[in-house]
Amino acid sequence: MKINIADRKLEQINTTVESTTSVLKDAQSNDRLKVTNDDNEINSSCRTTMWEWCYRVVDHFGARRELVKISMNYLDRFFG
Image 1: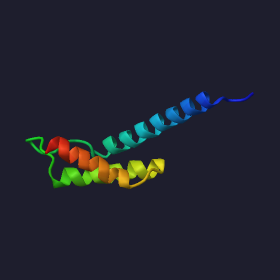
Image 2: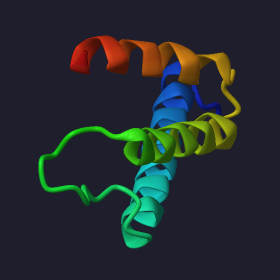
Image 3: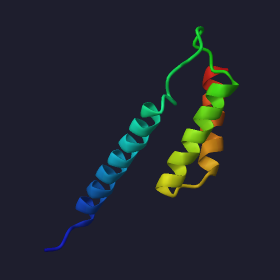
């Protein structure tokens, strides 16, 4: 039985969602995503955690690490 292209894409998307969920659960279980400061600002410790997590995600999915720099640039602009 042949699997058509749409079925393969759907299968890839499901795998990606499951993998992302796994990475998020791992980060949450290590208390890496919880805000620890009282004023809810993004400080250098929070930024470091975000960088590390983003690199783990792109490495997990085999994406270019340049995406982290671009993403953090957008994040800085949003919060700036």
